[in-house]
Length: 200
Image (cartoon, rainbow, N blue to C red; front, side):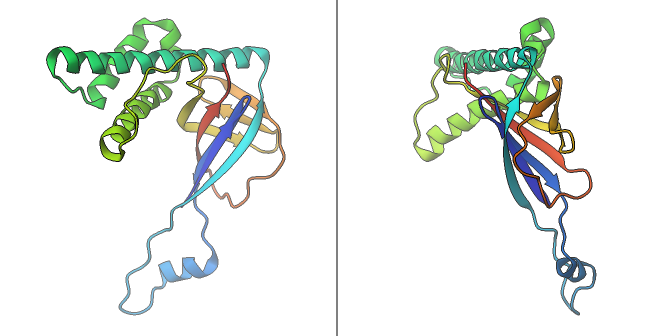
């Protein structure tokens, strides 16, 4: 299996995809292993492609709004987690927080307009920050100021259309990108995930 990733700067998109790439010899070894040997499992690979997006003005506004919403949600979840510990010595885990966030998204339009998995990745990012602090000795998670939270992620659902130099993004639609190279080594229908980066 090949995993491809993608990024958009200025806005940039970093795309990752999961696709099967098997050459003849590895395929033969998997289907017809030597006597007494078990078939080898498929090899996982990661490929990353980075594209400069060419969004319309309306799409650029959506990107900026999503970045702002994700930054607000990050700070909200961080404040919630800190207050629960400070006041009640309760350490809330990620799943309950994501459930509460889903309820907020149903009631608050400018948060609910962001794709649900993109919002989930915000909490993933927060908990990775906590893991970095406790396990790797990195700095304690801080509130993100304007201009510091510069990316959001599509966990899945993005589709690359190389023939039209566009990428289909969940809830946003087709966005043009600057084509400077072909994504090779793809077979079947690769599953793309992506990280969009831009300034605010």
